[in-house]
Image (cartoon, rainbow, N blue to C red; front, side, top):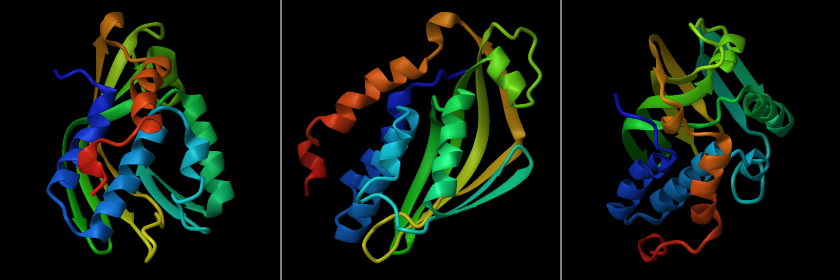
Length: 198
């Protein structure tokens, strides 16, 4: 089984950026890339910052067999606070396909997520040891529409709940929120590579 590496959150957008010349498409991919890194590094307040979202975003999230629709920045912010508290923010693609069009982005992702046993139990997932370290894998499709200014309109997330698999992993392979932040913060706060500036 492949073990999650938080840096892989950049693999698909980086590859697509290198193959894309359309300025609008590049702007949307860059927005998504930053958004994804901010989520995984736990910096959700910056997702709501300037140049990222429309004034009245709408999120449609279908996970764990449930539907959640969020309207506006306040509801999105509350969702992110709960998400951070759940411990489920350390995630990334184990494999992924990503496409861009004038309307936005589409992704099919096989995600891994690192959680302690007690965090999985709190999310309704049965595990053998609440103190152990786990990787939750599942297929997710997502669609990211953008407005005329290349600001995100919302996230439309669809989880294949039946694809979920829970694997106990070694503590040495477990990625904490602190480690994910340490890996991603230099990419978020440092200069963009030359190939991103075009």
